[in-house]
Image 1 (cartoon, rainbow, N blue to C red):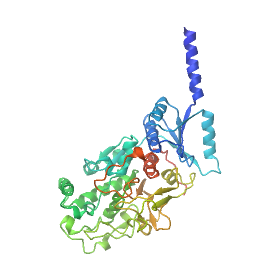
Image 2: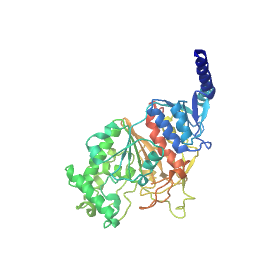
Image 3: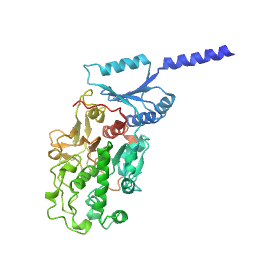
Length: 420
């Protein structure tokens, strides 16, 4: 009996070895579900299983030990993978790390703790990042002004800014001031400001923006899309003055507001001018708005990802991993960044052809980093209030959503010294 049991164990071990000790998750056109693959890698990190991110190898593939939980999830989610013997894995790594290749191996070691800055009651389809996190089953917490002002932000590794207006102008939607949802939003914001001892919503939002800035300077990872990108820098630049029209806060714009703007205090932008017309939904000169007609056609609007050196610039390479080089455009209240207002050390990750615009940028502040991605929803060209939610099961290969998920895994990378 003991001999039979031993034989069974040996056969099981041999079968396991034959099936392979590692698993390769390709991220090129062979992948059946690009977006779900990120969730599998994230969950493996949560269980303590490290992963290798093979930059520029088959669309930014992943290589990890073939743990039973990993294999089970890959099969359940319908994700393409290949089992490999350790010798085959080693050969792939040698190929990726070979001196003549524009590829590199980055080790992912720990799942980041994720927060989304968004008000209570936010529905996932209001925000592309919430859609991506939900679809990929990546755990996250919703936090808002109270949690940030009470110091909770420091407990997270990565934070995303929902489509927030940090200037306190309620997204400049004054034309909706008689709508129930606008009235509710305004009342809640004003009550929150009073609770924390601020006379105006703009003062409350500035305090929150300052906390977020300190979080990044201390080593945090910040990601934002649409108006969150533009308005946080507007609020920070105006920390010594008042740029909010009387229609929103009861007092006029400061007479010398433009002269008192402090661009040294911002994340990504300099030299811009706020738009103080209360009825114009443009916040500032940062946003160049939707492309001019006839380019405001989803079939003609696209942007191109920059090609970085994987070995010398691993961070921007991680952030731009994709199975395509061009991504279809999409608009939002902040659609694209005017490159004239970018700070010198900000890295442009993607831009439309033949236009002085950036759609996707990255930079550092102190010990931390920020990544700003213009537009509202990569799979909904022109999203309107009340539009139905985007169903990501219909967009499993979305290059635009892959850029969001790259940012979710980026903080898990073992820190590497930037070479340029």
